[in-house]
Amino acid sequence: MPFSTPLPRTAREVRLASVPAGLPAPENFAVVEAPLAAPGAGQVIVRNRYFLVFPGLRTLIGGEVEGVPLPALSSGDALFGPAVGEVVAAGDGSPLRPGDTVTHLQGWRDHAVVDAAHCTPVGDTLPDPVAHLAQGASAYGALTRLARVRTGDTVLVTGAAGAVGTLAGPIARLLGAGRVIGTTRSPEKAGRLTAELGYDTVLLAGSRVSFAAQLAEAAPEGIDVLLDTVGGEQLAAAVGAARQGARFALVGALDGQLSARRAGGSAPVEIDSFRIVVKGLSLRGYSGTDHPDVEEEWNGRFGAWLRSGETIFPHTRIPGIDRAPQALQELIEGRHFGAVVVEV
Image (tube, rainbow, N blue to C red; front, side):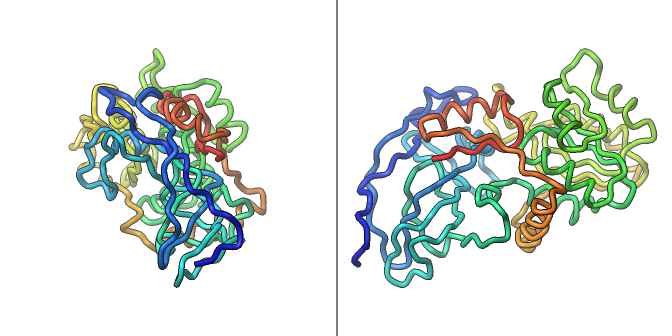
């Protein structure tokens, strides 16, 4: 089909150059030029503006993907993930047109040929297109569908300085929580969580004081809700600190997923099942695929909260696709606050 402007013939993309023995490092990736085909029927070419760097890539690279709705990555494969971009060409039969802004899953490259059916047009629900890469839908879904925050609840959010946690605390507060406690390993991040995002107190995991002791002091009467992104000792301690009938929603297990001793697909932890029984706890894992109605509801509320100033989208923008492999390493090392986004 004819195009009004010349189309690029190649795309720059990040590939897995070698499978790491432990945690991935920049030398395991390569930024290469790859041929870019013209869009076929029902396809579009998208020029990516932003893409998300997310810890789930560790699992895909490690190959332990049983139960994960995404394929493993092998040496030579291009990476992928959530992206926001502009349609620059559309094939026959595509409902999208050049100039449309869309989200899709072919990030980690500057241009992508994508089936139009796999793109979601971006309207004006959110004030900034990059906010469509926020990971708040899982936090919102977990706190409204599983843990169901009630007015006055004491809520614990583990991994509070990450992409999910920086949104989970404010969401819990907006849903009526009376006290919100977070966890992080960085004193600097702890300060930002209380100063910028309204956390009442933040516990320092990995410090000389045991996490269970810190939690007992911060919540002497116990917690009502756990939004867990970490697992490990923090999950175990939360069981001990739970009030009667507490609700636990698990949305991640970074303690195991980002361990150099594992391949990204396991996170064993010992918890007191007797406490779960006698306290009548509910403990469920959250998957967005089980709650397809959440995304639209979240975007509507997130957009309203952003415009009113009731919340923000904490994120770090990394300029340039060449810096993407380093950004992944920095994410794994916990160097950034909030979501990590590469600006192409």
